[in-house]
Amino acid sequence: MQSFDYTPFFDNTLDELKAEGRYRSFATLTRQVGHFPSATLHTTQNAAKDVTIWCNNDYLGMGQSPVVLAAVQDGLATYGAGAGGTRNISGTTLAHVQLESCLADLHQKQAALVFSSGYVANEAALSTLARLLPDCLILSDAMNHASMIAGIRNSGADKQIFRHNDLEHLESLLALQPLNRPKIIAFESVYSMEGDIAPIAAICDLAETYGALTYLDEVHAVGMYGARGAGVAERDGVMDRVDMIEGTLGKAYGLMGGYVAGHATLIDTIRSHAPGFIFTTALPPAICMGAIASINHLKVSEIERERQRRNVRQLKAALTQSGVPFLVNDSHITPVIVGDATCCKTVTDILLNDYGLYVQPINYPTVPRGTERLRLTASAVHTPEQVAYMADTLADLWLNAHVFAQMRA
View (tube, rainbow, N blue to C red):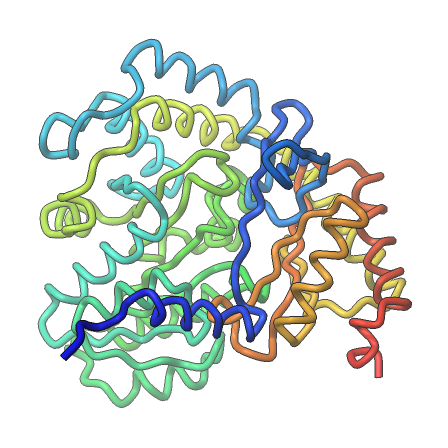
């Protein structure tokens, strides 16, 4: 009997992805500080071209802000490059403690806890809370992020999925449960692939009526919405009604890391029980210092948010005028639905190779099959001319490119 031949097996799995148009190719970029969203795309070992990035989550350009860069440089000079250990074993610095205090203040909660990424924060917090609560039931929005799904699955708790932003369906599920059964409603504020926004106040109403905790993912909203950038819950005046808020430092704040904020007892429970927190190296202190600077700046500055909103309005208005179909929503995200993985990849290749516009195709499993899309993110640092060029280019492709013929029909 021969041993299993591993290489052909994995070759076949990759060939299947390529045949479906879902094989992911990474663009190697050099971001240009002071010129972002312009970047250098490295096409081969010795070739490069200038491109404009249209799929970046650094929504406000804080990753190149002089305020943030100075804080990171100060952190490097003070602490060195890394934390040197887990939070429990020598990895907790003053910068970590100050960042968590800053985040608790941002969301007006008693405490906060920082993780290495938003994905880890969701997985660790949800899996820990639901695992510890006796006979816990998690009610999860159908469009929740993969990190929330992973946390729910890893908790081992019962789960029920309610239709996306469907309050009637959510209430029908809640009404079937005993009032004294522990329950967590897990949902997002801004859904990153659709761009729509949850009815947070109404979900809080249901949670209070039926005795559930609320767990809100604000990763695509922190820094962007609310008087101090605390997210949609702050904008809508309901932040105090949400039990747990999860956010990221890797999008509008321009760095890396994730966090949860809430009641001190909940945060301490996660800190004390979550393997994803206990057994991983702490964020570099310099990153923490950069995050503090970014958060504090956006607590008082509206300039970045105003520029970003202006660019989003310009992009959506131009696409509407030219007839390019996109999902209409009230957020900063502009999804252009293509509906076919191969077609989506072809369009993004044309944009990159012929026009210097970098947009990554969004395919399954990030979105359901048949809903493949371009996810455009106009940032605060795009110029009006760059916005107009992207809109005009898409309009020209929509009207003339053969790849869109079937959609137009």
